[in-house]
Image 1 (cartoon, helix red, strand yellow):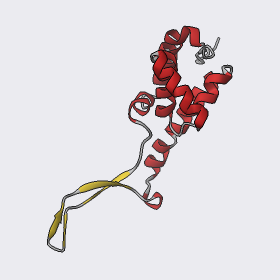
Image 2 (cartoon, rainbow, N blue to C red; image 1 turned 90 degrees about the vertical axis):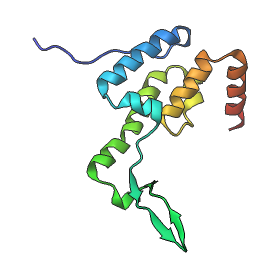
Image 3 (cartoon, helix red, strand yellow; image 1 turned 135 degrees about the horizontal axis):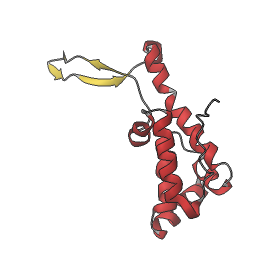
Image 4 (cartoon, one colour; image 1 turned 120 degrees about the vertical axis):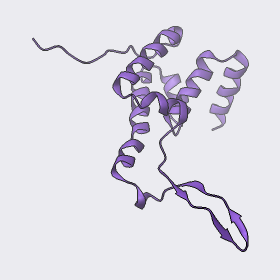
Length: 138
């Protein structure tokens, strides 16, 4: 008999947010060990180092800049789509709560979605009220 590897996460439930949050964090960690870092730090952006140079007698120290998409390596491209995958996971579990889904749909990263959920579910009433007002004006 074959065992199923699927894990059932309940649909988002604001009343049981802390339980849902713990389950979804465990789920995403099991799904891909890079996902928790994406929630904390934001999407992966390929970067390259620009060596120190001197321009008109002024020393410009070495620094990192985002790569042009034409310079992306295959592993970097694969890491870049992880944020999209994580956004889909979060939206999938928020679908039944139209209010929460509507609150995060305009977010451009999984980190931004996660922060907005936390503000709406864990923040003070003042924070929640301000966040809702921002959402109305967007």
